[in-house]
Image (cartoon, rainbow, N blue to C red; front, side, top):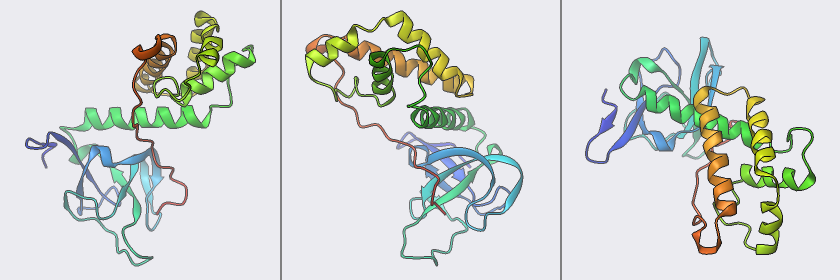
Length: 213
């Protein structure tokens, strides 16, 4: 099973419904969302021998192959939980692991947005929330008066608070590095003058596993 296709330069990930099944389907890495580790499969909710990486895909979105899914529980397509294992993704595994760990990092960051470290001013807490929501790089906040108030927050204190916030999330080194890069990007965008600020970006967000099959 090849990890990439040369014509489209996409990263192909082979997924299965259960970790042990032979039946598998190929998906574009970018089409897998809601990454998490679990020992419970989708569908029949069978328990595995240990935790594996899982994610969510559309049942009709595969590039090739097939997957154990009947579509009997309602009109298709369905968003389904799939298992991603290293043994059938050896070539692409470093990229898969990076995508999974950064997805988990962003998900935990968003879920913890209201739990800023103690000792921060109300304004600094608001800046932290804006960083988490990527508001500066996406230019959600446009009023210079408000931006100037946010710029008045001490950078060193903000950086220390962010490091403490990230440390509590219990992430992999890749996840920590990713969130630190988000901090740098957002603070840079906050302090960039006028037109020099980053243009809005359309960033994908991981799908919540709640209510998925």
